[in-house]
Image (spheres, helix red, strand yellow):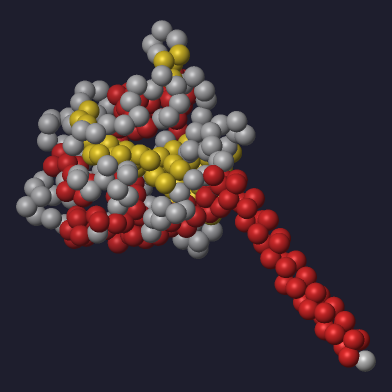
Length: 292
């Protein structure tokens, strides 16, 4: 009788162990597969944010210009975040394209600091959806005008390097102090950016590009307002470089199509090789710039 009880107890213990081990096995298997997929991911997209009043179509010309001189063509995926929280997609990422362009636009694309904070929250939602959908573990960023401000708010308030690493960021004509011509008069936004800059990724490489028509502004944004970005990024990230573009198409709205800026993106943001002026393959000459 006692022997039967011992056997029954042993069988019950074995069944209990199997019942606990079975789901744990599949959980471990799934997580190992996900981690392997994560670490083996070669996708490194360039995620772009347009300025106020602009849509997810804002960078069509820029991507077209880059693809004309690029050895390997880059896909273009357009994402729109609606006020309801819905996210829609237009275009696709080609299977063999490891460096696609992704543009994130917003239904609420209005100007103003409050809207920039809302857009940063909306971008965070889109960013989470993109990382879940495409399993990339690193990316580069480009923000035109207020798009650079949205990126800054996102990096300071929402970004988690455990989700994906941002390697480089280029802001183009971004008014870090809005319309103020002197940093002696700091806006609420600039003061907040400076206060929270400790949250910025320390390994980030940042390029701040300004356009000038008359050495004072790009026709809309004061040069000093763009240069105020140094109070946010300089000595906080790995490197911060200011670049000024003059001449044709240096006015604010034309900056994304400016050929000099297209060359800067090719040189400093893209990882892949590009074609030189003679149609020969030339390597990206600079993957890191440490000028402050």
